[in-house]
Amino acid sequence: MQGLIQRVSYAKVEVDGHIVGEIGTGILVLLGVEKHDDQAHVTKLLHKISNYRIFTDEEGKMNLSLKDISGQLLVVSQFTLAADTKKGMRPSFSSAATPEQAKHLYELFVEQAKESGLQVATGEFAADMQVTLCNDGPVTFNLSV
Image (cartoon, rainbow, N blue to C red; front, side, top):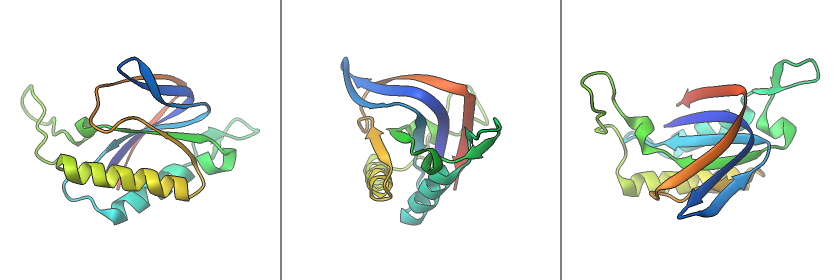
């Protein structure tokens, strides 16, 4: 399971011209689910994202987590993160989870994030989405478990 996280001052997701998810200061996570992923991967990645210290403290150092700043989380499904790009000129998605498995684990990730007390917004699974964000920094990390 992969989470491409971006520290944002603002982010939103639109489907068919309508905003379906929107946050202020926090993290936009593009979530990629692979065949071998399960509930343990969800729990581990969520813990890592919510506690990863990427927000600046009073000294300007990246020393605070999403939980520390009471930030918001925008979760967007992103199956292309599971692409194998090592050879050829076209990505292979052979390691990507099936749509059913990916949807289940995506929804579990969102549910666990909400249960942990985070303010959570989402995109729409398997929809054609337009994501707008202001990457603060820019700060971007690819986390995998």
